[in-house]
Image 1 (spheres, one colour):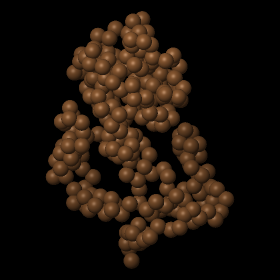
Image 2 (spheres, one colour):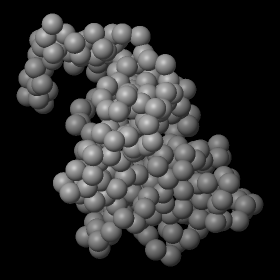
Image 3 (cartoon, one colour):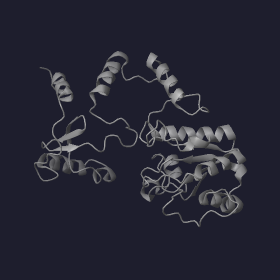
Image 4 (tube, one colour):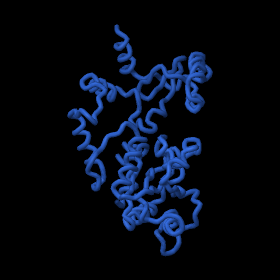
Length: 295
């Protein structure tokens, strides 16, 4: 049987029992490969890898090169929302690659593109009626920022502490997750203004003031930021994760969304919901839904 046939049999076999850890971690073969990587990988990558090296995935399990079996709790992270090792996805994906190749769909379209676009528009809130394609979340957010600035003719974009929007110079500066990602870039990536994320548990702000927006974070933006620091006429819009992802998996209080969308409407700002992490059903609905209740 060919190597391809062997791999296909592994993928379609019943997942092994997990967890089943038979060696210390990392195991001898994993340790050897990880040590090799220390001399080859960028330090930030080599130092943060899990203490195992994959041999294969099957359903909800991961088997490492030493034969240890783990539950797969990592494969639906970031921009990989559907997980890995799922034959119901692998089979159709392989069939599509065999038929169309690894094609650049900005140049050559295939029938599935039109079906996908229609389904995405049908799932999106009513105000969204067009689709673009991107290679990854970084590119998608950077395109959104560029679009916001061009449509409004305004230079500034408001973002939030703890947000993760990508690792290009622009998106690393837009985000404010951890300083290592944007170290050295803040002085170069101008045009972004940051405020604390609306954290219902550890907000730095006092309770909402009487007669205000109903949300203390938006009160701060309105009363302090726009009064002392930023001309609202220069703001193109707001970029926010509907639920903070790498910054702590924090959902804003319900009062935040109508207050924020009201502020956007008042000043003609655009609102960009970065759903790379919260979309695709991760929050129980196709988009996270929080943002769109009041849009």
